[in-house]
Length: 320
Ligand code: CDV
Image (cartoon, rainbow, N blue to C red; front, side):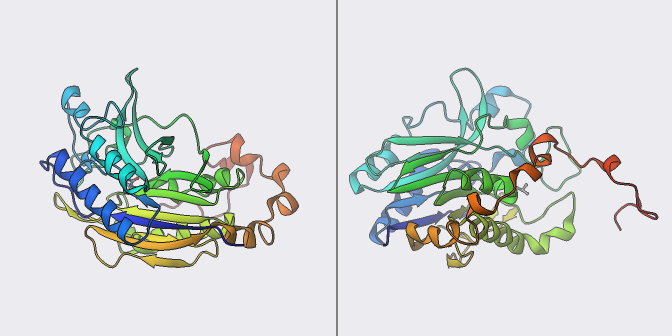
């Protein structure tokens, strides 16, 4: 049995702060057309694909902040993307800043079927960075100022002939993200990301940015027997170098296609959704092998509880 879905990770190069949104939509449409020429049925765009990665700037004026957000999807500017997708009969997953009618701000991603109907909306669960002004940083990461954490968790939607999940950037670093979807039988996870290579709180991690990106998604794919399609906004954007390396990962954990530039680039792969069962009915047959009764700490507590284990002698020294 095979259930192939041809996917495209539509990587974007930088989006300038003053790049008009219609121009960005034109770039998305061009990527959509390229993906269509390559036979793609589903195109995954990056996180916050319509704008520059604005959380790098401290902004006081709420009106200026809201100018980065979309109040409807599709809206007047994004309608052209939906129209072209419908004409080409190609689906997509798009990350954008969402301002809801009742005033909530989310870092969101929608899944759109080949007839341009919106199948699902996902709101980023793990919001990284900080909320206060930290001008000591070479650039800030103010996602916790701009966005509320998504309240809905990790859903899985029937679409593209399979079970499709979504996650956004930092979500991909957390094993719970994949497992919550894995327990709903996810077969393909769409992920958009913006990952600055310099991590100001701990720069020793900078050189490992690409390794960590691949590590978490390859592990998440394998341990849950799912495909992962990950699209970056990479390259040097407003002076900040961000990781590219968009990729498609198989349920085996292998990277089967990867971007080789840090610019607008389409990464294509044919994903057999039936391949997931080679993992989910064998080594990761959850129903047979999981021990949820022993995992209750995972949902019962958030941080580490040191008092549950005696302090080892000599510990408590700060990191070198
Ligand atoms: N956009 C992100 O969520 N970026 C984070 C950075 C701040 C570490 C990431 O996990 O890539």
